[in-house]
Image (tube, rainbow, N blue to C red; front, side, top):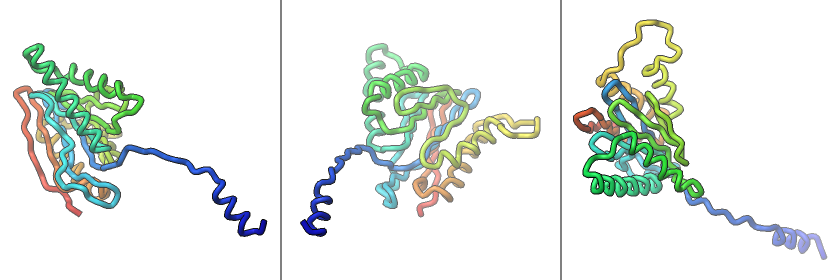
Length: 226
């Protein structure tokens, strides 16, 4: 056997690894800020894949009831599948009990739904906002009550900003401003405006859901499109 035959045989005898990865990173960012009797949930609308933009309007925040909004970032198909499944369960609850599901009950439903898929999890980061509360979830259903939270591709840029401006971490002065609805909306706008300068997966449009005891309103603002 000459050296060429030995080399060819060595190449063909190496075992080939077969891989299967069903997920995709579609980018985008969401945040939620809770006040005394309100909550602001904001997300951008860009859906991307690597250096390609799949859609400039692909919402990541969804109205689940008259007092709750769910936002997700990550794999868009899993996020949409989760919203469809939760919407169906919420409708069943409403028909059975003739009332809206409370935000805390909805948080438990989201946790149970994510945990039920723990062996093949929804590859999405979830935030749930209600009047005065914010819940954040990991992909397998663990969740906690938050004052402010950001997730998605620009979360590393936005979360320190929220920690400082909302929770007043590492603030030296004693006179800390009270969190009002107008201030929360301005913080959401500023956070996304600065994030789009650094994160190419966040942009196009900003949707802000304002949750109060008397209902939900939606505001939209333009973001960078490049």
